[in-house]
Length: 379
Image 1 (tube, rainbow, N blue to C red):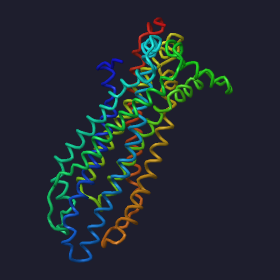
Image 2 (image 1 turned 90 degrees about the vertical axis):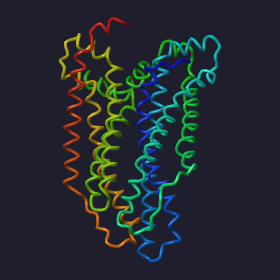
Image 3 (image 1 turned 180 degrees about the vertical axis):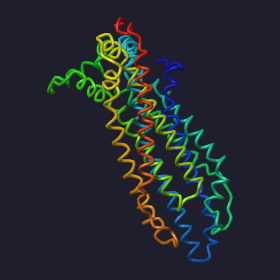
């Protein structure tokens, strides 16, 4: 199997998400490993409570951010592999017809795990550039004795090497699973047939309504990405506003930047894939006289409720996370302000997201107009 540069470039989403995940995890886990050196020097109860609060914060943030981004990376990896197999069904079907086994073809998909290696390596390296400043900020009141940045090989193994191996194996075995289809099925494609079989059991409705919902159902992973994008934007933006009294400016800036990067990457991936996968549908609708707004609503409109649901879930998530953090992690620390839900932050994130999302949808609506009608003649 040969994966071209164009196919490899599509893995940029996994690269960015894995970079962000490892960047955050390395900062806090390396801090936790280095802070152990000052434990024998703790002389009073205040220092001990602050020490345990810092360690617990690092564990909580690493587990929450790392776990969430891990699941997203796996979903995105499976999406890329499925999309590649669907797009190259004829070539893969010919290989099976020539006698190549599913496993032998699937072994070539280990390359998809290379995006994880690049992403985790960049995130791991970048964290060490920021780490000296991060350490100073985390102990800016000099409550704990001074300690320096140390390199821990165990983090390199756990955050770079092991994820690369795991994702490479996942790529191979998931590709093998997707390859378990008859040769004729790969050569002819069965995506539309599956949709039609599902649609036949449901009540018929208006054409545009049916088309809009079938597009969403045909690619559930893209719906997940749209929801995840709005979730990241909402939770990170509100969290950065709400933590201004209990966290440093650097920490809130990291939250905002990572939230914007994740939201932008996943939303761009999802919407671009939806438009590119439905170029013939768009061209056909235009040839039948459907105006721009109806084409846009049919192709992209089904994802709007999912995006807004993601905003609501992000709001709930950040509130529960911060409330739990202050109640559990900082329960024994004195002078920690009580957390209250920030209505102003909620409205800022909601309004800004709606404006941004609708602007992006408008830009893609313009792109839909530029789809050439000759696309429908290539079948």
